[in-house]
Image (tube, rainbow, N blue to C red; front, side, top):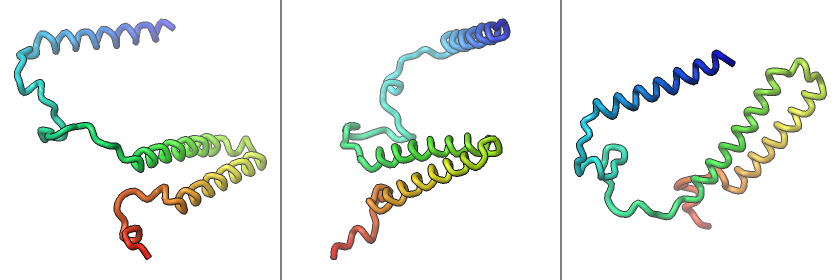
Length: 123
């Protein structure tokens, strides 16, 4: 407990010293350039509010879901020798359901994001 308290005090003290150094060593001048938005080296033009693309959020959600499953598989892999045959059956069923979900997602077009030559042609 004592080492954690010492570490916490050291970290908070270091943060305080750095914040004070930045405040007193910085220029502190207010200029018009400091108040304009800046994005990726380009001055933005137009309105920043626009309709968000839903496929982007779907891909993000799918990534999170499959990332969590990856964490479960890694946890299983670290203790596979202790789990024996029941653990092997469970992880096999888990991966099978995961793969069926991925195939279903692929067939429904959930992974199609952006222009595609096949989607552009209508029969």
